[in-house]
Image: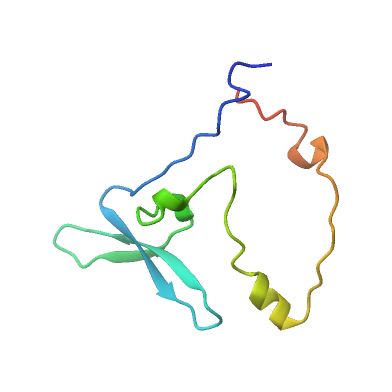
Length: 105
């Protein structure tokens, strides 16, 4: 077993330079669309879609736990649509992860 095998995964947390995390209200359901407002010298800010997730939101840092995962935010509106159903799923097998052992090279 590698010495890193039991170490927690490292993730980027906190704010990113020269930008702010903002959220726009969605038009359907109670969704907030994450955006990154990039501050430019002598220009208005540039808003771009932010796919970095909640770990780069300084307002959430004290509430996040990577081992626990993220709260389910889409379940309620998926059920309301009426075109999906829940199922028990199956056990994850090594092939699902490309036979990776989870240990960084």
